[in-house]
Amino acid sequence: MYSPNVMEKTYLLRLESNDLGQILDGLRVRVESWRNTADYFASGHNANDSFVIEECSGEREARQIANFYSRIVRNLERQFEEQNGKPLNEERELYLQGKADGQGNMVLRILNEWQRLKKMTGPRLRARLEILKDEICDD
Image 1 (cartoon, rainbow, N blue to C red):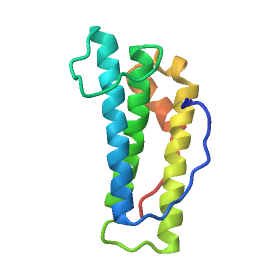
Image 2: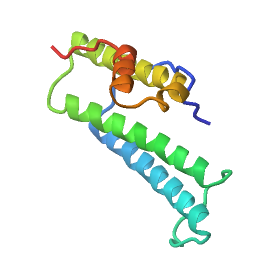
Image 3: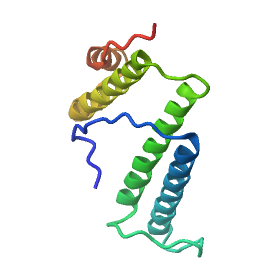
């Protein structure tokens, strides 16, 4: 299962738009299935007879998995929108890859300091987050 504390290798893939659409459709089905599973665990009944409840330990795990798939969908949609109608040159590909790596690194730093961060408020929290962020500039 997905572990947010593990730094994963990032890949740059080239897909035709129809292939990307098919992948997105499949991932959206997974999101819906896991959300329905979480709802089942929360309510105790299956409001939608057209899906099979996924195997997991309960509502919390089902929501985490649904969020995991949702994050992938949002990432793919964002990349599609960034590239739509614009052919990518090698420099742009490297830029987008570096930006994604920096965002992933910030997420890991926040997760590693989560216990400390959630005790902070206002200006202290903002100052600490500023220290954790990567310097990613959009030129």
